[in-house]
Length: 157
Ligand SMILES: C[S@@+](CC[C@H](N)C(=O)[O-])C[C@H]1O[C@@H](n2cnc3c(N)ncnc32)[C@H](O)[C@@H]1O
Image (cartoon, rainbow, N blue to C red; front, side):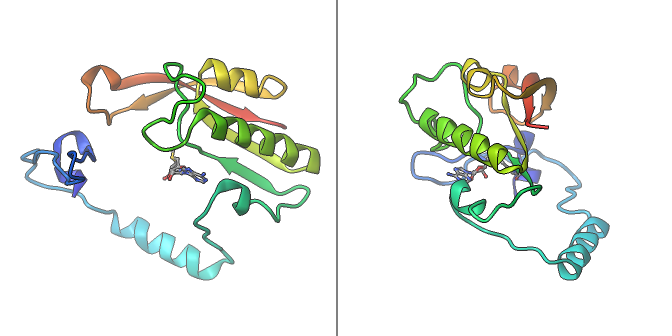
C-alpha cells in the first residue's frame, strides 16, 4: 500500500490509523516477480532459520568464525542519554548491543554493524574499524530529511 502513497511513506495518526495520501501514480510496481521467485527458491533450497526476538537471543548460539551483521534502529545525536526514541530502541539498547558486539568479537566471530554517524556510536565502537559512508534516503516525512546522510559501517575484521 505504501508504494502507491506519497513518497512511499508509512505514517499513522494518533489513533494508529494509516494516513498517507495517495500519490496519483498510474502504475505501481508492488513487487518484482523474478526476484520473489528467486528468493522463494533460495529459501526452499537452503537451511535458513528466521527468528523474531531480541538481538541477544538471536545470536546466543553464535560460534567462532560465524559472520553476524547487525542493522539496529538508528541512534541520533539529538536524543538525551536515557530517552526512548520513537522506534522503542534507546541509548541503553545501543550500549547493550555494543557490549554484545565486543563479546562476539572475543568469541572469534566476524561482526559487522551499521548505524548513523553519531557521537555515541563512535564512542562505543572506537576500538573497531569505523567506515563512514554516505547513504541516500528517499523516505522521510520532512523534505529536508531526504537526500544524503552519513552512516557508519563498523567491523571487527
Ligand atoms: C534499521 S531497521 C533494520 C531493517 C532490516 N535490516 C531490513 O532491511 O528490513 C532496525 C530493526 O531492528 C528491529 N529491532 C528493534 N528492537 C530490536 C531488538 N531489541 N532486537 C532485535 N531487533 C530489534 C526493528 O524492528 C527494525 O526492524
